[in-house]
Length: 247
Image (cartoon, rainbow, N blue to C red):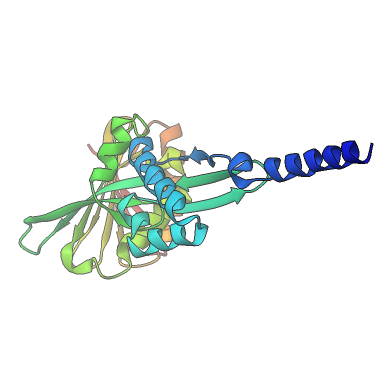
């Protein structure tokens, strides 16, 4: 009887030791990705790179360090990213997002010669034109982008950020009416609209762009209701508005 009990408890202990062995409890880490507004194929490659890094290092800190050290947020056009590990379901979640493209930028020299092109996004940053190509390839960007002409020597200022801010505050419906924005060497801003296929040039001058953009919206809304859009809207003087109609 005693020998039977000893054998019984020995089997129980053996089974407990066997079942608690890491190689029997270890599970393959699961991954889930959310690409947001990003080009899925490109950011999918990023996710695979980070998965491999985690499988080698077993550390979220190592992943985040790799993103910073290799500047992967810039390389893959990320505006934000969040990486979490859930021990409960042994899963890592990658959540990425990318900015909205606002304008196709032509950066030119004083001679008028084109210097290079870029994409202005809603964060006010300038991205490589490849970003637009990737989004269009996945049909995440269907509409055409308005153009921005910007002098090369203004690129180190905040002009492009100010212009991005203008488009963010006017909203998507009005932005679709903008065909081109021009900043000249004197820091004067001109906004060219296309309303009912009719061009209208709005001159903002050097200052109070936000206030003038708000006025422009009201003018276009009012005149659009009357189906009569001015060919020229002069807002350079912040205290008055001068409009001209095409004869």
